[in-house]
Length: 283
Image (cartoon, rainbow, N blue to C red; front, side, top):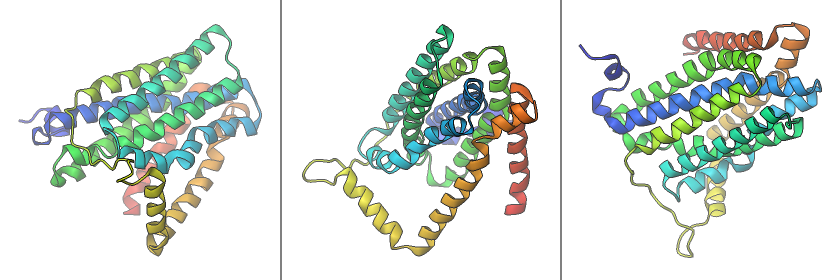
């Protein structure tokens, strides 16, 4: 009988896939912890809806500002090392935030700046990390590999992480971010075990293309393909309308519903459960 490990990551997919999977799952635990802890931290410092919503905006604004650049840069460097370097930057931001919280020097502006810096590093982690799977497994195993990565995201990031982050926040404001720093650091160690993989390089020397040239080429292709262009616009509008209430949900949950930190963490988990339950009907 195959072991649980072989069912999750079949031996034919290789050791590199197991290291990638372990790194992704570990990182998602930390991100799930912050999913509840970060809004709670901001809400504990201010009751302003604008500042609370700014925390979510500043964490995801880097995707709009640096997302296209991250994709072009990932084509020019070792993606495994790029993920490691970006995760190291995330760990540094988290350790610094913990130091400010422990010493009592943290304020709303330091927290917002940390959210932006963390989100910027996360853009490069997710962009480069998403391209590692096709370089590690065979094309026939891409579906299974993506399913395992997505399962880790749902369980660790959406279900287990938020209530854990809320519980740790109730115990002490710095604890969830310290755990997140540990998870990110461990993810670096795990992904470093992946053997170096060949990377298609498009250098920025005079004989090659530049980053902005690649971005312009991609945007031009998008504009010339109406179905894809419409899909991008739909996803953009959906995410804007979906994120709008979530930006201030923590204030509604804590100040109007009086749920407390742990209750807010369970609320985010309940939302994830509802989204998962709706998936079969969408197919």
